[in-house]
Image (cartoon, rainbow, N blue to C red):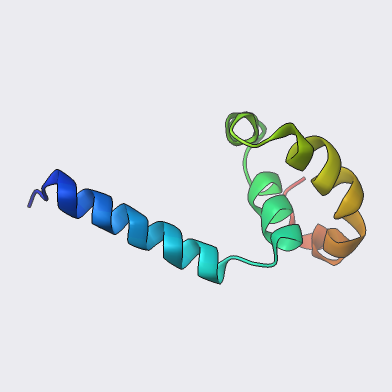
Length: 75
């Protein structure tokens, strides 16, 4: 079954809205997503993130908040 481009755009918008509503708090989601990827995949995903997220927020400002998740992270 194929869907037309208008339907695809509508579904993508719905997905983004759903994800934004159900993916928080940011200080837990960001590290969890990145550190549960293989190193190669992590590099690809990190390239799409602003430097402030990967170089400031995750490793410095959010680190204490996501420390309890450490046992669940791959690395």
